Amino acid sequence: MAKKKSQKKSNTGSASSSLRTPIACVLGHVDHGKTSLLDKIRGSSVVAKEEGAITQHIGATIIPLEAIEKMSGTEGKMHFDIPGLLFIDTPGHHAFTTLRARGGALADMAILVVDINEGFQPQTIEALHILKNFKTPFVVAATKIDRIHGWRVTENAPFLKCYKAQNERVQTDIENKTYEIVGKLSEEGINSERYDRIKDFSKNVAIVPVSGVTGEGVPDLLMVMIGLAQRYMTEGLSLSVEGPGIGTVLEVKEEKGLGTTLDVILYDGTLNVGDEIAVGGTNGVIETKVRSLLQPRPMQEILTEDKFERVKSVTAARGIKVAAPNLDDAVAGSPIKVIKGDRDEIVDSIIHEMEDIEVKLSDEGIYIKADTIGALEALSKELEGHNIPIMRAEVGPVSRHDIIEVGTVKNPLLSILLAFNTQLLPDAIDTLLDNSMKHVKVFQGGVIYHLIDDYLEWEENTRREIEKQTFEKLIMPAKIILLPDCIFRQSNPAVVGVRVLGGKLQSGINLVHLDGRKVGRIKQIKSGQDSISEAGEGKEVAISIEGPTVGRQIDVGDQLFVDIPENHVKVIEKEMLGRLDPGMKEVLEEFTSMKRKDEPFWGK
Ligand SMILES: Nc1nc2c(ncn2[C@@H]2O[C@H](COP(=O)(O)OP(=O)(O)OP(=O)(O)O)[C@@H](O)[C@H]2O)c(=O)[nH]1
Image (cartoon, rainbow, N blue to C red; front, side):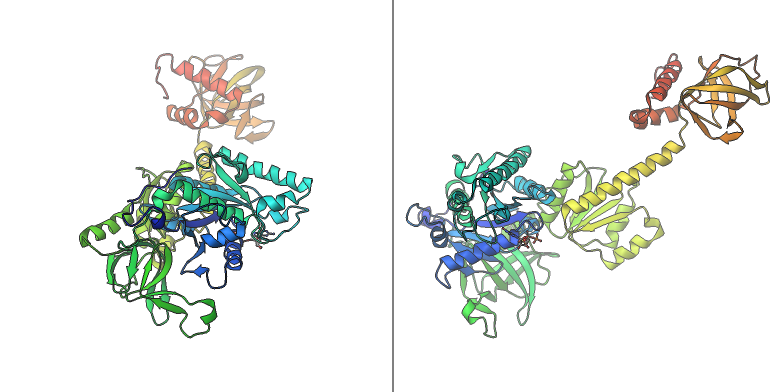
């Protein structure tokens, strides 16, 4: 398992007292049970811990170690320094990629949710690629085990305990389905195993069978996560509680009576009311002062008028709402830092982090836009995987200017804009309707693989259409022989019976002898009384040829080629060779070798 980037070691207290709560995100395919699992994790830990002890934060929930130990029945049996786990409340890869910190993912670890009955689906793979790109350690939760036919429910029980209580068929079913997931992960270059069979967690991804509804396996899942964090990530989790606060903006939200506020995950240091802060905005870095820090009121006080409780100071890691002036332009996913020490350096570091987009750009390619840096990166990585080149990548809504830029791209397959999770501004829509922008195509969507699939499908169809138009105009190879007893007219035009020996004979084209001498142009092809435009291999037809006289320039038994122009040969050899039938290919080879006898590079 990859380690997170190491962070500055804390200089306060012992290692154990300075470990912060690891931040976890839940990812996976639509409907595979992300929300249910998160709810279950929150719900069962509320049960496990006495009322009020579980802390619901802004945008996140902390599951304290004590609650995890109680659920799994491991209290006092093992020693952990990790204080618990902080789960980001919004599941899905959009949240994951938006939440950035230190140029990577904010989440220290992740749960990849896979419905055990459905297995890997497109978004599972997409999520896996994102986790791989960010080098985020993860655990696979194989959900919906309670849907396996014959499953005996033992609510919220550890997995192994309830696994033993199942009949043999159910056990075999789980084994097989788990190994299907192992197989899929292996295709992606990842070793994995059911968690209880893993000896070295640094080399294998753990798969924990769970139910987000009946709760089996949830204690095991949490234990595995705590264990992983404790054993492999402690360096990245060291924390200077007393240092200036650093966090990531989860959401920019308008709140009644408070104006624009920021929901922030504070992952390092302390944030106080009155602190000066810097945060990334659409028009540069915003510098402002914390007016208030707010957290949700405890359950029992929910009926009071004010839904938030004010606090003076908070320390990492936790979710908190920040109220301050001038936050309207703040951007979700941007860093937020307490200004202490060198102001310019802090502002620069925010600018740098906001601009630090890892997208490989090409000289020729499509345009992409997304609502956040993380989303842009995730999209670009997936495009890279499909070998789709990107010329430009930007954060923000699609503007008129963007459409005009795309409009300058001449290649019809690349005058494309993919807008991921971001809107088209009204002037962009107007511009798209303009006649001069007819070749510009915009794809919009909120699911990366849908967006890419839509584009690829369109691209394939358009490419085929363009090829069809090009190929329809091409003169194709053909070789014919003049048949005996079929001279219908000597000349002006000569009308003769021929058999097509190979290729496709078209009217309106020129014929040459096998040595290249010119013969004349086919005026018409007739099959019986019908005039036809082309004749394939084996067909016997009558053709009228302008130019030659039978008995002089041509005669019975002569074999003739269609004279293919040089630029047509180029296109056929480059683009169509794979699609030519063997007879046509053979004729093309004969024809080009005749042409290349004197000019080796003819048609190349
Ligand atoms: N029986 C059973 N049903 C489950 C389980 N997990 C989820 N479901 C059901 O599956 C459906 C989808 O679950 P969600 O938790 O909403 O899935 P999700 O991945 O969050 O879905 P999106 O937010 O739409 O991506 C719901 O009807 C859940 O009740 C499970 O472990 N067991």
